[in-house]
Structures are given as C-alpha cells and as structure tokens.
Length: 538
Image (cartoon, rainbow, N blue to C red; front, top):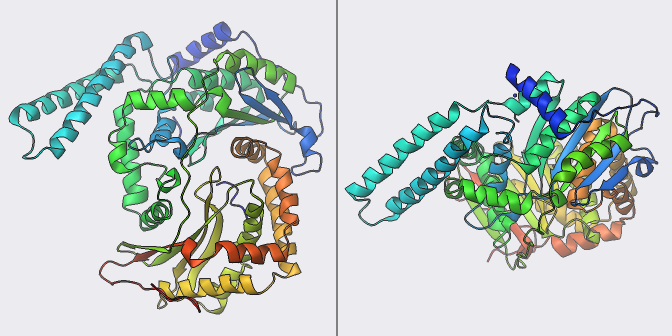
C-alpha cells in the first residue's frame, strides 16, 4: 500500500508574563469555541463535506474539521519544502532549518533580543570565516602556514567567546515549555525529501497562544546557537547514516539509483556539506521556501471555523507573500542498465532492490499501490508468505511503493534480510521469482479484495484521531495539491485490474531499470546474486 507518505521538546516564570503581554498587544483577541456538532466519524462518506477550506491573501491554505468530543485541537503545519529543494553544496539545509526553528524568534527563546542580536550577527561572520579558512587549510598543498594556523586559532577562540556571550541571553526550550505549561502535547517536527512538518495538540482555548507562537516562528525565526545545533546535526548523521548499517545501505542504494535528481541525496545532507552550512545560507533558504504560499495548516478538533479563520487572518495573515520559489528543473534520466553496489559493514547482510516508477498522479502509480499490497503488505503478503514462512530464506521481506518521496518520479523497492545460513543471492533470486510470477499469473480476485479492505482499514485508522486526520489533510494538500486525494485514491485503486498489474510489472520491473544494493560483512568478499531465469549477467 502506498506508504502513507511516511522531537523534540524545546519553554521561565518571566516567560508567561511576557507571552501574555505579547498576546494582548499583538492580537487582542481570545478565541471563543462552541460544542454544537456531533462527532465526525473518521473516514465517513461525508468527510469531503466536513472539511472547511480557506485561502489567505498571502497564499496560506487552511483546512479545518470540527470534532467536539473533547476540548482539544490537533494542528499540523506542512510546508511543501524538503531536501528536494536543496542545491549542490548545500544539502541538509531543510533538515538543519527544522532544528533551528525550535531555537525561537525575536520574542521567544531570549531574555533580551536587542542585546543578543549583535552577538548573533558577529557569530555568523566569525563562524563563516573560520569555516572557510579551515577548508582552505585542509586543501592546501603543504598545509597551512604558521600565520594561517594562528588566525584559525584566533577565530576559534573568538567563536567560543561569542557563544558564551550569546548564551547569557538564551532561554533554552522556551517554545516547548510554553506549550507544555498550557497543556500542549505531541510537539514534534520532521523533514523529508518532499515536506517539512510541525505538529502540536493542545486545549482548544489555547488556540490564540498557538497562533501567536507559530505565526511568529513563520515570520521571525532567529538562528541562535547555530554552530552548536549544526554540530548536533552532524552527530545525528554519524549515528543514523555513517555508523548505521541500514542507514548507510539505504543512503548508498538511493544515491546509486538517482544520478541527477536530488532524491539521490540524503535528507540529512552529506557530511562535508553540513559542516559548510552557514547562517546566511540557512536564512536565505528559509526566505526562499518557507513562505505562506508553501504552507498548509490543518486544524482538527474542538474549533469554531469562523473564529479560527479570523484568528489566523489576524496572525498569519500579516506575514507578507513571498516570490515563487525556484522551480524544480532536474529530471532523472532514464536508467539504461542495471546498477549494483555493495556496502561493507560489520553487520548481518541485507539487500535493497529498486525500480524507477512514476510519481503521484500518474495512472500507473495506483497500480503500484496494488502491487505493493499484494507483494509486501503484512503477514499475508506474497513476500512474507514465500520468503519468510515457506522457504525460510529471509528473516524479513517487504516492499515500498514510494521511495524516497512522491513529488517526483521515485522508486518501488524491495527489502529483505537473509535468514542464516541463506545468502542475499538466494533472497534476491527468490524476489525475482515473485516478480516473474506477478508478470505471468493474474492476481486473484481475493487478493484484490484484500487490497481494498486493507486500504479502507488504513484510511479509517489514519483519520480516526484528530492528529491523524490533520496530518493526512496537510500532507496531501502539500504533495498532491489537493487534500481530496485521500478520498479519490481509494476509487483509483479500486479501478485497477489484474491486466493493469501484469502490464505495469512487465513494463517497469526490468533488469535495465533496476538498482541493487547489498550489505556484506567486511572481508567476506563479493556477494554475487543469482539471476532470474532468462537473464545473463553482462
């Protein structure tokens, strides 16, 4: 099934007093909510009638659903911005900005921004010069001169001094603590190749507080503690990618599958790029992409839509519209031959196989959803039944129809971990057998019925909670351009025939369109995979 487009807590007694003053002076409005509608059943036929849509003059999209069971509202802000929007040499910017967005604004996260600002500005200048001099020294034949080393040391000392000066004005985790004190839960954020997302649930009578904080964050972020947080991101990369067998396997696989498109770049960024990111580049990226017209706010819960719209107009509506962001122009060239890569690691073997496929909105994308369900969705799927239960070749086996995103043509992938003493070669051959079976034999009506039943169950589960519904609404508005995709996708999948499945499998699941990555234990040699019948290794 379509992987439904698969933090951090950061918030003084003085803060409460200052925030109340901000709310009164900036907005002068308290939202009044009523409890007058019956509960909305997730996934009900009239969901389309329940969603209220509003578009601000600055381009911001607001989606609202009333649910009055409890006096709580869940909110999801999704920007159609992610790693896909980054440029060469600046990978990881979207993820780094997500971290920086929790550092606060001119009002939040500081005891005195007027005094803090000149220190933050000098920190950016000193840090940028230090980065450049260190890069120059590292690439210079013969190494840095004594004078250059002295300058680097001087800049390092000055950076430490400035960080200590700035720290006296920083109120750590102020945003999160504020939400927490007012009953907020689930404060979180995430960055992917396609989107950046911020979410929170809180008592509905605290909606004005949310609007004050989040509109301020959207309009006036401050990149405080930049170099400290950049170091945190670098450590995160080491933990999740460099020192993780699966992380490194997927990073290597994806970069091999995409030669030109930015889908081949890890969302967290390349290590050398992360260490080269500057406050100026991060701020420029924010101004270029994180504008109201790139954002969708979904609110689900105990709200009054009319009052909510008025509140959002008074707060977010003050943020000026921005010029359109640079368009995405790079298209991945057609793959014209199998690509195979190995990753050596002191870990148990694993394999990833991927085939290029169309993106969201293409008619064949819905067929891949069916294929994903048949082959890899759950314990009754073909891959699990054959490779794990019957042949006992693998400890796990599955598939994913949308790797690593959906805003551009992507990959259908197969993943598996061999069950000792079996090898990745045996598992790979077994996967190809299942692919050939898909091409050769029509999928049964029982399997197609299971696909729809699982899709309906996933839809109900995903929309049952306020947070789940808000997440789905904002996500599909961002990546599909219309939240109604939640509802229309089910009908499209229902229209897929067995002939469609066979046609798509034959068209896309070919050797020339395939990339294979294998995780091998260091020193064990080349893990050559067996080829399916009829294929000859070049």
